[in-house]
Amino acid sequence: MATTVQTQQPASKELPPGPRRLPYLGNLLSLRQDPLNFFQHLHQSYGDMATIYLGQNPAVVLFRPEYVRYVLVEHPQNFSNRALLRREGENAFASEGLLTIDGEQHRQQRRAVQPAFHKKRVEGYAAIIQQYTQELLKTWQVGQTIDFSRAMQELTLRVVSKCLFGVDLSTQLTPLSSAFDGVLGNSTSMVEDLLNIRIDNPITGYGRRMAAIRQLDMLVYTLIAQRRASGGQQDDVLSMLMSAPSGDEAEPQLNEKQIHDHILTFLAAGHETTAIALTWTCYLLACYPQVRARLQADLRSLLADREAGPDDLAKLPYLDWVINEAMRLYPPAWMQLRFAVEECELGDVRLPAGTVVILSQWVMHRAPEFWEDAGTFKPERWDPASGQKIPQGVYFPFGAGPRTCIGMPLAQMEARLILANILQHYKPQPVAGYVPELQPGITLRPKHHLRVTLLPASADEVPGWKRFFGSEERAAQEGANRQGCRRALFRLFGP
Image (cartoon, rainbow, N blue to C red; front, top):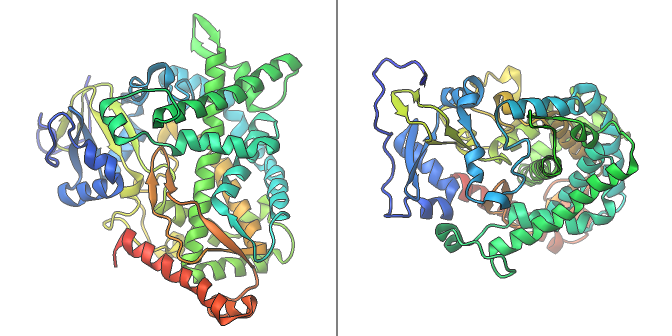
């Protein structure tokens, strides 16, 4: 039976209008070259929804919060993402993981690991987050220049592997980070994508990606084998998965492939999105020093010289607003795709079964009709007293509905604890002239790793930095970075 959103007019059988398409390629060239601006242009030109073509297959892009709610919250059973995996077949990354399975299978397996993300359990992970963060901070020194992107990736990977699977990957962080880069940050060439070329050798994007997947496979299957060999049950996600129901009567428990894909999903999603959120937050704080100064003042006032802990987070609302605002402007998950299982009606348009539906956090999070001064990093908009009304379905960095990211409570606490502890010691300042650019792949990464110089937390903002650096020339070099930040924001958001 078709499902509907109420409309005053009879639903049209025609798909909504959209841009002109090329023969055979459809709109793939525009989508591949600059998807973020392409989606924003669609919203500006066509309003609430637009049709694009992925090759010869139509896809409808939705730009209204009620449509987001309809797809993700009100009728999630009618929208599947399983078909996304058909193209890669057996080589699809984590095809049996929690992000990709549907229906009763998803409900049962999510329920099996849900205890690991209950409030008390998540609060118990705080000690691990604090320990690993402090261990990292002890390796940093004032005046040192570091790769902040890589540091956050390795820290969050270490945290998630210990919290969820009881293993410390500290000796393997560099190769594992590189392997995840190969999967999540490595895209195939346009020619490979358009012609669906799958040549598994080191000179192709596909080949590099498959080599990275094999490296991760070796790690995950080793973890499973070691846990089975130990014969003991631990109170972690790995043990929960090994005893979880599969949702399949013919095979009541998860097989090795399913366990492997769940672990890989948790490792990838559990560290990647938090690391990206921290990287973009650090960058924005450097571009808006008045925000960073206020946040550090809050931290000094509440904590003095002690470490930030989970009980402090409720007393640091501005910290919460800062991260919310960073994830609004730079949502790590910037787009979601679904397939309509049954015919449905959205607004005055009837979508046939099998229609691809696209939702974009990137567009919704910065749509001027919902956000005042949408292009500005303004944490105060999240203050309940500000009067900013945010309709449900406009802000969804972790998704929404029954498929909301299961690790959201852990990710939120982790990002806040890590950022608070870093800012108690340092002001990470991007190197002079740094412009991140954008790399929208599976996640929204900065195209260039964020390299920062570690200023002391007590250092004045420009021009007072010259007192720390000891020379006008060095201070001017560091001050030039602010201009780089402004230029980058101008290119992204306009004047």
